[in-house]
Image (cartoon, rainbow, N blue to C red; front, side, top):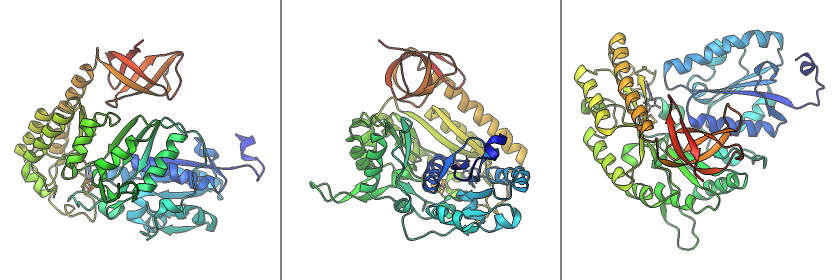
Length: 449
Ligand code: 5AD
Ligand code: SF4
């Protein structure tokens, strides 16, 4: 440690990034690391040896946002010891609170929103600053091309950002801005680049990913307006790319060509995260979700008709303002009818600036009890779906060695983590596995000869 602290100035500077929240933040952190890499920064896992600490934040619920301030509090002694240490706050809290973060926590040097982080290197050179603009330029085109290093076999690729849906509880339209789709050629270029660096599985990311649309390339009669299903088919043509996933989708944007892609495109994995939030029409209306329970259920039927083995997941909010016991029972009823492979459920958190912020809240103990009840039902479904995998053959993409000698761990088609004894295998192998056992949050299996 002391050796590290006295390394000569010519040594690479070290960057520590902590990522909160969703997969898009994971992707953004990677892009910020690459941008700072061009400035001579290398990533470190050890915060205490960092020259720059970057917190890439989430604003979706109050607890997520408050974590930032407790982490900043913990950084105070480090900054006092080493005033040269740069502290940056990126992501959605940066966007929502801007300069307020520096007022509350003067140890923060840099505040940069999710649409302005291509300017982070210049800000770091300047020393101190706040940038929460939604610039006209495309940040991705202003980020340095990533160094041609090998990548993990599964990667994220942002194709769409922002949201125009304005659900009454949600900060995303304000923190990430209006819906913007990245152009086809840039997405395909990035996908080809990832594949050339060893990536075999790409998850296309967007706050409303299935709302993606774009102008097709004007070559070979492929021009015209493309929907998300067409983009998936173009991705599937990439040699060396074996698996495609996407998240997060809105039910109202599940177009026919996307459902069709689930039927006809074997590279598109049988997994779909399709948040419904509530099983009550009254609450869906109050949430401004713009669809009914029935429309959601009919959509699920059509998706299952196209791909019968698809694993479905969802998000739920309990205790939304005005939620009655009957509304809650309606949600449990919807869950029972769909049978989700897994799902995320949250207690409603009022967010400043959103339409629902001032509405009278449901009693907190009641909301806690409803959350427990819903989570118990969702866990029992998750367990049953996992157990139904036992005896089945799945494909697994190995992502890292397991805890035990000779063991590998990877994801199945259905995104279950699977542990396999495979002493000869390496990271990046895509193998056939027979599932032998289901544990709390993972499966175990054996290689199929
Ligand atoms: N309170 C609780 N949960 C929320 N989510 C979004 N906003 C809120 C909020 N204010 C949940 C939704 C969304 C997921 C990413 O987070 O379920 O789908
Ligand atoms: Fe938020 Fe999703 Fe609704 Fe958009 S569609 S406002 S991101 S919950």
